[in-house]
Length: 109
Image (cartoon, rainbow, N blue to C red):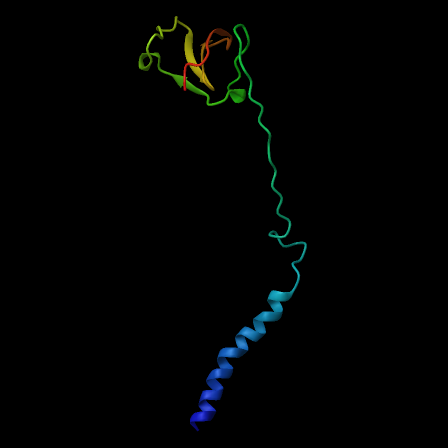
């Protein structure tokens, strides 16, 4: 009787794994979302800005507004202007027009 019970327990443990094996061996269907995975990459081009150009923050590298009080030798911006970081450059940009009036290269390292 003990041998019979042991055989039943062993069979109960082996049968589920055998039933799942054919399901794992089936090829994936086209309507399965995991099989049609595509990765789209967008190439971002960065721009070096010059005085007199219009500033576009989407094309600036490491864009952020800069507080002039945190850096030495940076004077307060005139009314209607603010400082902006683009890469390692400090730009003085008009708030409403977006025109660059001054460029300080190599400010951030």
